[in-house]
Image 1: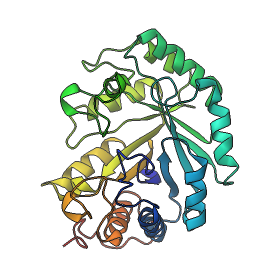
Image 2: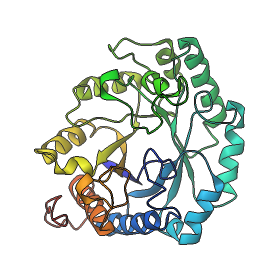
Image 3: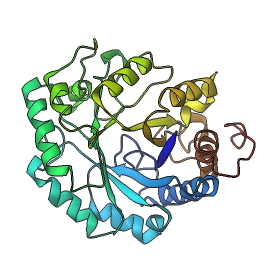
Length: 310
């Protein structure tokens, strides 16, 4: 079910990793290396990707190279939203990919690119078309974020909130489908680029949209999907039942699964952006998920997700 495993999400973004707790990213580098090796030990055929960085920062990538992290992964990810949040223009996409390619010879995956329809749905449609023109053929993988608008009552995973004008609210309008499930003009545009362009769609714990999402993706001709399995969710009741349902529903797609989010009680501080107290526990979570959903030729018994997190 899993063809690729992404280690964390946007590690250089304070909404996903706390720089005050890890100012030189050495904790992150150690954790990422442990996780990559744990994934490889379970199934070396699974592609390992360093979590998509946002902002796209060659200096951060150089730091990961200095720490040796890039020696343990097969590709690196970048995320870009120049029409919504980034301080560069959409036509600079090839330049941004080139900046990363000057640091590493590893393939560069654009594991999230998107345009909000907050201002106008026509802008989103144009932005999708222009992104496809700039990225397809220039990046090893391109995944559009996202299929669905984010429901307002769920809230966005960000620490910025309402501090920067409309920035927070743009999070809720990134989908090809509105919150009520009706299509936007960009969905018709997307049909021109699938399957070369995949999707990035996060599913919340026991997400009621899962089955409809699968039906929509098949209708759109999507073959490549990036999603996530939250380490924090592994401590919820019936966590494995949900993981099994999610991964089973996605079995027909080439899935890149992102492993991230620290359980509050296992962090240096009680927050999902915190470095873990014991980084080996995150590595074991990654190994357990690969063993369960992308086992290698020699399959070992499935251990509990909580086994090392007492």
